[in-house]
Image 1 (cartoon, rainbow, N blue to C red):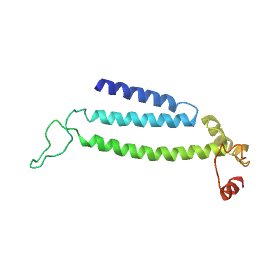
Image 2: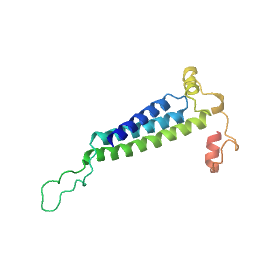
Image 3: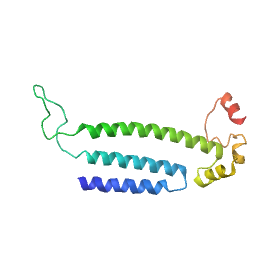
Image 4: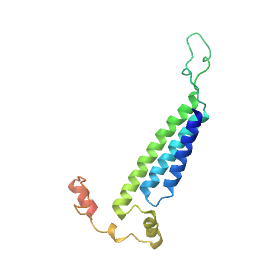
Length: 147
């Protein structure tokens, strides 16, 4: 069973690193997710796989009966999942706003705007109804975006 988890960690890390090296920023985010899942699985495996009881102390005893699962890796993984979800949501919001402003998700095009020191022309023109891709907006937000 541990050999399967080791192979899965390798696959997740390999796929995550491959996607991090792609030019699309969306693929980079998916690679970041895969790396986070691989790290969580690595922490879980480092804690040891025990087919036993939950680590609960029975009434009238002072310690858990062996074998029991170690709760520390489980708590670390749960914390890592919550933190990585928050970071992912923030990154998706940044990618969405960047795409709306620059009309590209290519990392080379995004770094070209840094080298030139100016925002490309598509970011200066107002968004038309055809470009909104079905997004419903209020009039006050539409006026803010077009100004």
